Length: 522
Image 1 (cartoon, rainbow, N blue to C red):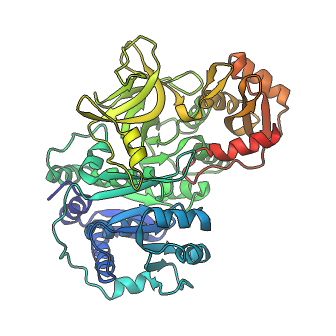
Image 2: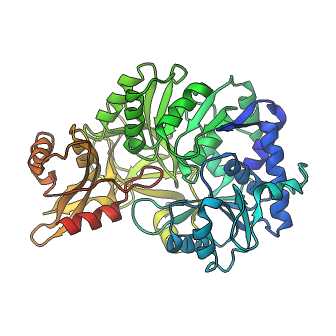
C-alpha cells in the first residue's frame, strides 16, 4: 500500500466494508459498495482509452456519482479535474482546454453548455452523462458505463507521487490548476487533531478503530474544500452526507435525519442563510457538535448568531488554501472585526518579510504567510506562476500564500488579508476583509464586498457593494456605522446597492465583479 488515495480507500473497503461511506438523498452506499462501483467506472474509463496521467474532468452537482468518479479516476492513475458547474461556454472552453482533459463526466442539466464548449476543446473525446439521456454526440450514460464492466480490482500498482489537480478560481484572474502529489496532499490536509500516520496502513487502522461519525461537507464537491473534507472524513472512517445543491431547509432536514455530527461550510455566505432557516424553522440539531468554516472566515456577528442558535456546537474557523492544505485554527475571540489571529498547526508555517526571511515574533513587521514541508507541486500549464509562488530559499521549497500577516510575540499569526485585494488610498493600506466585517455587522446589511475604485487624488477610493437585508440603509447610516468602528480612511466613499451578491458556489467573494459594479456607481 502507498500513500495513494485509491490504495488507502481500497484498504478501508477491505477493513470496514460494511460501514456506510456516503449518503445523498435516498441513496446510501457502504465502503465496499462504493469501491465496487468505482471499480466498474474505472474499467469503463480504461476501456475508453483513458491512460495513466491523463486528465478526466467532472462537471457535476453533489452526489454519489461525483465521489465514485473521483475514486475511479484515481484507481487507473488518471488525474481528476473539477469543473465549476456555474461556468458558461467561454469559461468551460478555457478550463477543458487548459486542463488537457480527455474525458468528461457531467450532469445532463449542463448538456447545452457541454456540447458547445466541448466542440472547441480538441483533446476532449469521451463523455459520460449522469441523470438521463444526453444530446452530446457520443455520450455514454453513467448506468450503461457501469453495467458492462466487472467490479474486480485488477489495476496496476500506484504511487504516492500520482497527481491530483484542483482548479481554483480564487477571487481574481483565470482559474488555475493546483497540482498535488497524493502523499503530500494526504499529509497537508490531515486532520489536525488526529495522530499523523507513519505508514498508509496506519490510516486504515485509525479509521477502523474510530467510532461512528457522520460528517457533512456543505460546499459543492467541485470546490477543493468539499473534496478535501470528504477525504479527511473517510480517513477517519466516517459516513459522508451530501445535499445535491445548497438548500438550507434540505440541509437542516438532512442533519436531523442522518444525525450529522459535523458540518463544513464556507464563511458567512453559507452561514447566514443557514442561520436564517434555522431561526425560521423547527429542526432536530441535537446530533451536531461542530461547524467548521474553511475557505472564508466567519465574521464575529455571524459566529455569535450561530452560537446562539446552536449552543451545544463548537463554531470553528480553519485557515488554509488549495495550495497549502489546512494550516491553522482561529484563536478564541478572533474575528475579522477585532483582528484575525491563528495558531499554526505546524512549525512549517511562518511569515516571511520582503526579503523572504522569517519575521521576528513581536516585531510588528508585515510579511506574507508561507509554508514549507507538505505543499502543492505547482500550477498546471503555468511554470511562471509556479516559480513565483513556490520559491526555493536556502535549499528549502516554500509556498507564498499571498496573505499578509505578522507574527505576535506569543507565536500566533495576525492575518490582515490578501495582498492582491489590498486598497492603497493616499498611501494607507485598507484590507477589504476588515471593512466587509464591519459592514455586515449593520442590522440592515445582508452581505458586503469591498473593493477599490480609481481616484485622481488618492490613487484609489474605498468602495462597498452592499446587498441589503430587508430595508435598504442610507449611505449616511452606513457611514456613521463604519466610523464608529474604523479609522476614517477605511470608511467607504462609494456605496453600490445590489439585489443579489455574486459569489462563487463555495461562497468566495467575486472581487472582479464587485470592482466593475463599484466603478459603474462611482
